Image 1 (cartoon, rainbow over the protein chains, first blue to last red):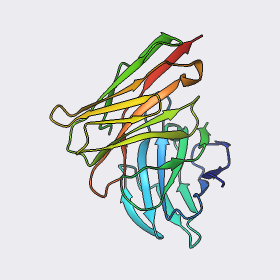
Image 2: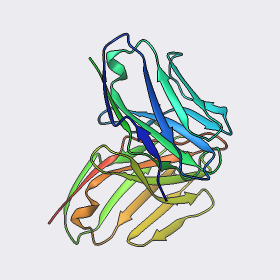
Image 3: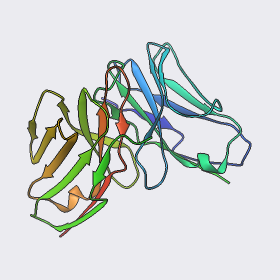
Length: 113
Length: 110
């Protein structure tokens, strides 16, 4: 069975641009969470979606938005990119919402120049 | 914000030795989980311990939880070079999502 997949693997953007990151959960998983991991830190929670509804939002500005589609895949959008948005963006899926065992994708490395 | 704090920040041992990492947290939890991350890629779930459990084993891993001290420890026995990675504790409360610590970097030398 395929694990969590994310695309693209790497991305280089310029300040002020916007970016869309994509995630496909494990088959049968209905919850997707997004995390930002800056070098040397642990992952920071951005969003959690379950059954296409937002179930949680971390302490991130409104430039960050996300959505979940009927097939449970998800997109994370970031507008007006800042240098500080450079990070590894991780997607994780789980069967249900909440703080249960999560399965992570390989991440998207975003570099903002 | 980070809920958990792992200690030490970095640990270097020889193959065959045991590795112990500690995690402290601040608020009440439903469960505590440990994850491993290799070379800045995706995290791999290792073990989950519920707040009403005190100890749990999985292969070479042993996790303890002391809710009165708000702390947990991860023991890896008979370490291998392949165990070289960053290890994170993550706490879960209610229907919230996970809150991760800053991690411990483990280096196991052959």
